[in-house]
Amino acid sequence: MNLVNTGRRALLLTALILTACGGGAGTTVNSGPTPTATCDPNDPATFDECGTVLIGITDADGDFLNYTVDVLSLTLHTADGRTVEVMPRDTRINFTDYVELTELVAAVSVPPATYVSGTISLDYGSSEVIVEASNLAAGAKEAIVTDLDGTPIGQKELNIVLSDRDQLIVVKRRAAFLQLDFDLEASHDVDVMPTPATAALAEFMLAEVHPVDEKDIRARGPLVEVNEDGMNYVIRVRPFHDRVSDFGRFVVNVTDETEFEVNEEVLFGADGLRALNAAGQGTPTIAKGKLNVSDRQFTADIVLAGTSVPGHDRDAIVGNVIARSGNFLTVRGATIIPHDVTADRRIHFHDDVVVEVGPNTKVFKDGHRTTDLSIDAISVGQRVTIRGNQPSPTTDALAPQILFDATEGAVRMHVTHLSGIVNTVMPGQTDVTLHSIDRRRAGIFDFSGTGQSPDLDADPYNYEIATGNLTLADFASGRPIVAYGFPSAFGAAPPDFDGRTVIDYSDVRSALGVGWGASGTMAPFVSMGPDGLELDNENMDIDQRHYIKQGPVLIDLTSLGSNTFIVPRETGRMLFSIASADSLRLYSDFDDFVSDLTLSLDGATMARSMYARGKYDVDSNVFTAYKLGIYLLEP
Image (tube, rainbow, N blue to C red; front, side, top):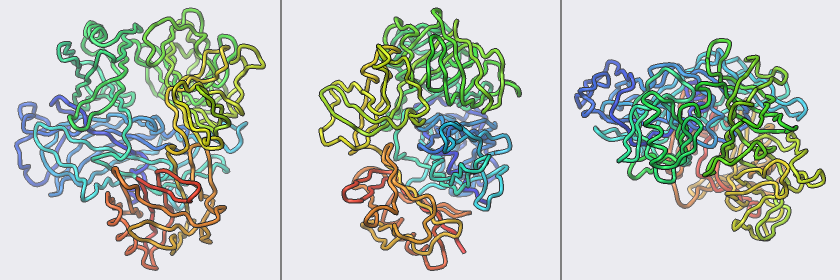
């Protein structure tokens, strides 16, 4: 079976280290050798003899607007053959939600042991996969996930394999960490030309005990208890939008700077904890924050609770504002979260939703310490979560625009991510040619009304980013840039965007992707050695996938004047993989990876595709990778 293929995509970056309470999560242990400890995950009396595994899921940036499938089960396997079920219920996951963060999936009690592999089972029967059409006017289109032979995938079981140097070692009364990385872009060859589009799966699913990419973590679940003296609270983990499961208990730490929105009231620190305590046990919560690996503690930056949780007592949508006319917002790429989930009102993607706001709409903003915002703050490009009412429910992702009533609801403005090419740099401001906002092309955004007058409306060809002290070097002109922040209030530009974090071309993350067709190639590299891989950019088998994506810039490998050299970075964690239809081998050491690759490319085994993530130097044509994988077609 193609076990690795589907698993790689769906399980990208699972974060599993956070301080956890010792509660169980319905974990069951299958028959096998007798555990070395007396831990029984189904018996709370033995929890002191158990260890805890924290599991998270993440993804890398890719071509998909929505990638929702049902996860039927997730198991871990020990070195001596025992199997532990860590996700006892099926749950529905949209992996594109986890490009910028990692979702905590479970905090489960397991027997102490060395866990070396796992299995994840996915069901594509009711999947919802959406890509952006090549023509902007066409918008989004549905896609079918197939195997490499073009056959649509039904249920799929994927292998999770850990590197020999990074196995998951669980000891009693300690939390261990596991991250599942389902890289959608690396794992699929997408063809947007047919209708529906197709996405051929060539699985790159990685499991990491020490993740290469560190992201913010999101933990969801109903409140168990509040410890005001200890500045923390405990939840029952319910990942994604699950409303009934119990995947273990988890401790969320807070500080005086932690922002709370409890029942649509903004508070900070201890005041927020007291409001959470008053809301009572069972109150739904969502926390986003950071994990300290050394002491295994999770600390929240933002906590939402009660009616502030999307979908709790009102419908909600999440997406980006692409146009505004008076009190009507057009939100594209929206995830619709009904408050009463049924077969006819399920959580789903809808490309365009028209939202009406009004004077009674409450407005919140991540990191904003006051509640003085009005609907005037919501401008084009803004990433938002909107709570209100969907009068005419539909689950058709590509149906015409639907209406959403938020006149008595609330809008939360989130940090928004944009990318572009630097035009000019000046003190306190950088002007760019805007390429995308939260991975949607700039051409879909209508900036009418964003300026103080029509002639001052935001111009995507000269988009003005206020950078404050984050000034860039003059020689950044013509190079890619990534910025995180908030669009200026509607009708207040210029500047067009308040940049809170600005990343210039020297630090912009880059991706390399190349395919060699269905039959593969015998010699993808001119040379292979411990110093790096020299990619054959003129290989006759290279297919339509042959690029380096540096921020918003797409560089054609076949147009370069020399072969691209791929080298491992000098410091920091790295992960390298060799995949095939029925195996996945992971390496944290580049020399080990190259040795295996050299033996594998024996003249009979063909290379089908490769991806790498890291940084690219245009001048030297050197790609410095911290993550690299190659998919082989074995004879």
